[in-house]
Amino acid sequence: MHPSPDLARPLPLLGHAPAFARDPLALLGACAGNGDLLTLRLGMHKVYVAGHPYLVERVWQTDAAHYGPSRLFERIGPLLPSGETSGAVRTRGFQTALLEETLRRGSERIRCWRPHTTLDLAAALKQLVLEAVARALFEAPEESRLGPAELHPLLGGLEVLLGCPAALAFTASQPNAAQRRLLTSLRELERASERLERQGNGLAAQLRADGLEGSALRAALRPLLLEAAGVCVSTLTFTVHAVSGLRSLEARLLEELGNLPGGTPNARSLIRLPLAERVLLESLRLYPPVWTVARSVRSGETWLAGVRLERGSSVLLPAWLLGRDARHFPQPARFDPDRWTEGAPAPPDHTFFPLGQLGRPDPLRNPALGCAVLLALEVLRHWRLEPLEALRLESALVLRPRGSLRVRLHPR
Image (cartoon, rainbow, N blue to C red; front, side, top):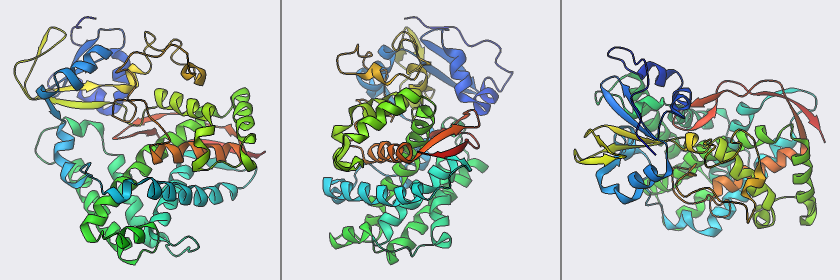
C-alpha cells in the first residue's frame, strides 16, 4: 500500500472537475492501479480517493473523529431522514406488511407486461416500484384511487433527488442552479407526501393509529420512499439485467423457486432462497447503489497513508472501485454469485459496503433489498428477457442505468 502522485493532466484551474462531472466512474477506473491513495483536484477543492480496505477502515472507524459528512449532506441533511426513524416504521410487522403489499402490487404489473414487445426495463421497473410503494402506503389494499395527478409530484421529487450530480458533494458553498433545483425538489416532495398523507388509507393509516401525525408521520415515511426509489429500484434493475441471458443461472434460480411451497416467493420465503441471496450480493458488488461515500476532513492534523490531508478537503471511499479490485475479488468483471457461497474465501473487511454502511447487506433485515430480490424473481418467473441495449451507468446520488435499457419480453 502506497500513496500515488496526482493523476496526470488535470486542467488549469478546473483540475479534474470536468472529467468527474462527465463520468465519475471512468475517473475512478483510471485511479485503479495508480496507488491506494490518489489525489484529485475538483476546481480548488482537493479530493483523495482511498482505494484500499485499510484506508477505508482508518477513515470510517479508527480516525473517524477527524472526518465529518460531505458538503452535499451538510446542505440537504435537514431535509433528509435523520436516522431517528419512528419505531412503528421499523417494527418487523410493519416492514413485512409493506414488503408484501408492494410485492403484490408490483407482481400484478409484471404479469400485465405484453409478450414479444420491447420494454424499457429501467423505466418500467422504476415506475413499477415507486407506484407500488406509494399505493401500499396511501391506498387501502383493494383501492386503485391514486392517479398520475396525485403520484406525479411525489415521484418527480424523488427522481430529481436521486439524479442530483455527484459533484454537488464538493462544489462551493454558494448555491448554484443544481443545488436550488435539488432543494426545491425536496420541498415539493415534502408537500406531496403531506397531501397524500392527509387522504391516505393504506399502511400510513396504521401509523396514524399508532399516534404519528403531521411532520412526524412524514419524517417516518420519507426514508421508506427514498429507500424504495434508490436502493430497491437500483438493485432490482441491475439484478434483473445481470441475470438475463445467463441461462444456467436462470435455471438454477427457477429450480430454487420451484422448491418453495406453491412456487411463489414472498417475504417469509426469503430465508429459503440462498442462491437468490448470493445473486443479490453479487449484483450489489458490481453495481453498489451507494457507489462511493464522501467524508470531509475536519482537522489539519489528519494523516492517511503517510499523506497529510488538507483541512476541508474530501476523502472518497469508493465501493464501486473496491468491489471491482482483483486483489479482493478474483475475476472481478465476472458475475459469479457462487463467490458468496458459505465456506468460500471471504473478501477482506471494508471492501464491501454497497449501501454506504459497513456490514454484509441482509435482505431479511432490509425491506428495500428484500423487495428487490423478490420482484427480480417475479420477473424471472414470468419472463425471459432478450437484451437489446448495452448497459450504461449514471453515477448520480445513487448508481443507476443511464438512459434506456431496452429488452424484448418472451413469456416462460
